[in-house]
Amino acid sequence: MDASSERAPIKKNSGTLKVTTPSDREVAMTRVFDAPRRLVFKAWTTPELMKRWLYGPEEWKLAVCEFEMKVGGKVRFEWRDREGKGMGLSGVCREVVAPEKLVFTEVWDEDWTGGETLVTMVFTEDAGKTTVTQTVLYLSQAARDGALKTGMEHGAAMSYDRLAELLPSLA
Amino acid sequence: MIETLQALAEPNRFQIVELLRGGPRPVGDMVERLGLRQPQVSKHLRVLSEAGLVDVRVDAQRRIYGLRAAPLRELEQWIGRYRRVWEANFQRLDGVLEELKAKEKKRGRIKRKSAD
Image 1 (cartoon, rainbow over the protein chains, first blue to last red):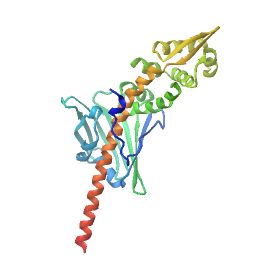
Image 2 (image 1 turned 30 degrees about the vertical axis):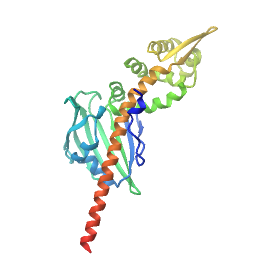
Image 3 (image 1 turned 30 degrees about the horizontal axis):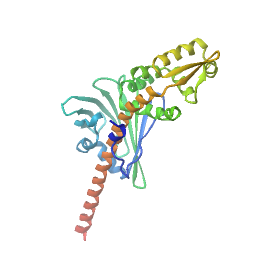
Image 4 (image 1 turned 120 degrees about the vertical axis):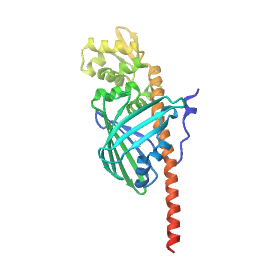
């Protein structure tokens, strides 16, 4: 099948996903949303709302979503496909400054990120639009690059940007 | 594809691939630019060649290496699927946010009406 036909149509108001590597242990994703910070924070932290958009690969649905928004609060996500096959991650909330900042740990059930990662999310508002920056800190550079090898989303997207630079020179 | 990733995961080999982005180069030229010894560079080139990432042609006495696009394209397609997971998620989130905005606007109107 033609790869381009799998892509979802680009909505007019949708921002561009930017992926960078701020340090050799981090990967950061940035995206602008056309809504005030209060609402973006709400959509990102309310389980009923998260289940409506936070899918896994191949449209796996978010079946279990616990996000206890307080320091020491429990984080648990489980995605499942139609046959009930799944993948999940657990973590702990480290810092909550609604609606500006969230810090939590993550470790996948099948630990493909080389141990726990620390996720920092920052929400900033400007003229009614909100920029969300999600930074994932790995235990080591090897862990970050290992995440790339096994196909963890963040790591993969990072190298995609480097590859995108590389490809035109091969045409 | 695992082979491609393993070949690229070594910093010096990554550097070689970055160098070859600019076009094919003779081995001696890469030795100079990378500040490595010739046997080291040759060893890395052998791994890259086995993974199908580079090919070589002989020009008089020189061996000239160039990048091969196929394994990188395959990798790009594979990685693009993961990126698209997030892009699709964020497009769905755009939709949820439009709905929340509309709800809030409606509530605001009702509030204003009841205050009149």
